[in-house]
Image 1 (tube, rainbow, N blue to C red):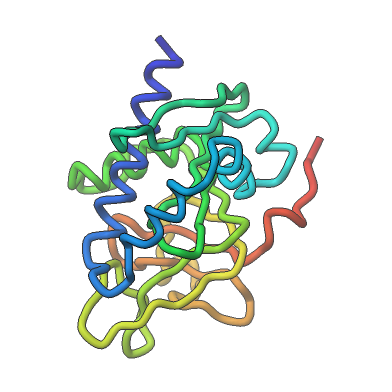
Image 2 (cartoon, helix red, strand yellow):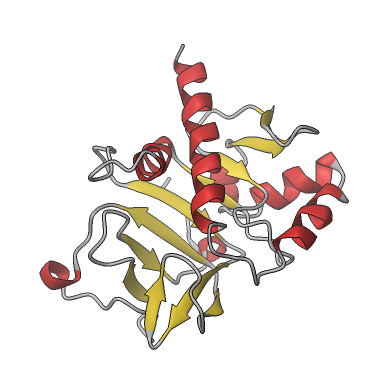
Length: 204
């Protein structure tokens, strides 16, 4: 039962990410990336997915890949509560992610237009190959707008928790410190840490 719940949350997480991040990306050539992923073997896709997190997390994480019908299928079972996927935004530049169950709850709330995230503990996700976000007039956007540009993010990890810039005094855009709050002032606000997950050591 616990495994099925985890799997359900993971599927909703990935569906939520796809619908949210792709909502305004007509100019991002989203179709090409899907073909690039499909051209990879199953083994290559699994390796890509696991490349998002430090090895001590990736080695025990589950992996889900899109099947022939586009639906996610678990190809590798995990034992540490983390799940890895080969791409978030289906762009030509791969952006795999590994995340825990709390992040799945966070995205489920976003997908269901809940007033705030439902996770009761901070969620952690890793993107060791980086990602992308939209910027316009010095601000980070949730979706594409006319005149906005895609900005490449370096390797990083995220903490999905309702951080607030007024309370924390943290910046709301990328900066030399590498720490900032994305989507500040919205229920989707979360902490971005530009620290390469592959250079993080295990606490064990």
